[in-house]
Amino acid sequence: MIRSELTEEQWKFKGNEELNKSSISVRGTLSLLSKHLNADDPRPVVPFGLADPSVYSSFRTSPSFVQPLVDAVNSGSFNSYPSSHGILPARTALAKYISKNLAYQLSPEQVFLTIGCSQAIEAIISVLSRPAANILLPRPSFPLYKSRADFQRLEVRHFDLIPEKGWEVDLEAIQALADHNTVAIVVINPNNPCGSVYTYHHLKQIAETARKLGVFVISDEVYAHMAFGEKPFVPMGEFGSIAPVLTLGSLSKRWSVPGWRLGWIVITDPHRTLEKHGIVESIRNYLNITPSPPTFIQAALPQILAQPSDEFFSDLLGLLRENANILYEKINEIPCFTCPNRPEGSMLAMVKLNLEQLEGVSDDLDFCNKVAKEESVLIIPGSAVGMKNWLRLSFGIERCSIEDGAARLKAFYERHARPNNPAASPTC
Image (tube, rainbow, N blue to C red; front, side, top):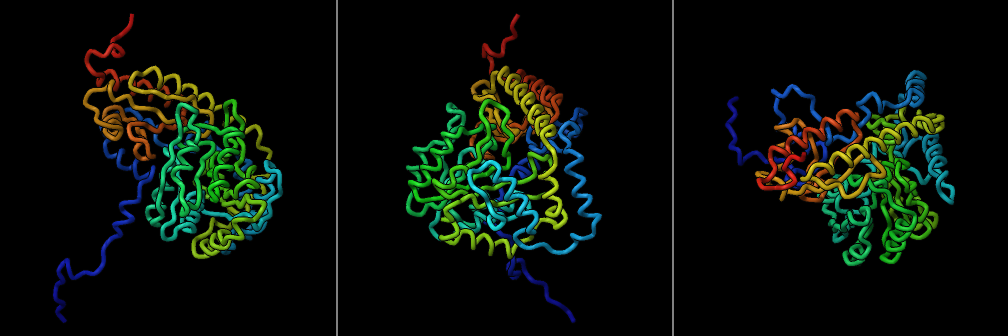
């Protein structure tokens, strides 16, 4: 039988253009920037763009966290499918763990386990997506929120974080942006990508603003307890009696195991307002039709959370504090950069790119492409996280890499400094 050839127009399928337009991510940005690396440069790449310190020996997770995972696998008891919301012992242990820092006790029914915090974000955005609804996102922000919202056709409205006030939320902007279709405010604390930590007073103001607007707070606490400055970490759930709070988190950062992909959604809402308005039921139903974290990782969670960990966490915060200080000092010595605030948490910092100091560099993306090619340094352009002509740098890397990277950035500046710029002239 002879088959006739079909023209391109006769094939009835095509890719999802909406997905292609909305799929802005850190990994995707790094992949594009990596194409500009010079393969002939013998120097190692300085990965300022990667917030994953687990690949470095000085940040390696504790063996005491690994052993429960090994035991769970070797037991042979956790090879079956888990509950779509997470196995009960894991949810019970996490409820107890998070309740330590709250004025009320959580139950296992208020805990949902997810495949990392990314799936938690995906779930919440999917639950909130309905015609005409909108969500308030910080600028700058973790890009997955906007990518998922754009894909789900949930309208995004941005409020600014104010660098002159330690990247605090612009509360007046929130009130101006919100309307009767606004459903939630996203807060990231400790902050990705700014490295800021919010005070008790500021978080309470955010909760009071949310209550005034009749919306709830999505509190991204992936970097929970990773505060190493003067401000202690305060969970947003502390203010759940003022306005409902959904707390998102994961093992990834604090335990330095992002590849384990275990995250959670916690209903920190003592008045059960989210349950009364159907949000909790929608979360359950969404997780019923999506994959779950591996059963053996869930099974290991109670023992991981019970491990004596003060020394590991203290050492980790000490490393991040020293790295943050080095990055802050070194970067601010280079005239084409301004880091307005010394990082106090997470492992990231936002740095302003002073384009007037550079010649032949048009914007943040052009800078990142050129510095990748000329210096083998990878940096996320601020436009990828919502702030054009800024840069996002990670200090969750080896200290020697930070110092080497800063030296390469200084060399790049000296080659590209605008003529007759006094800052570029060598001093005696």
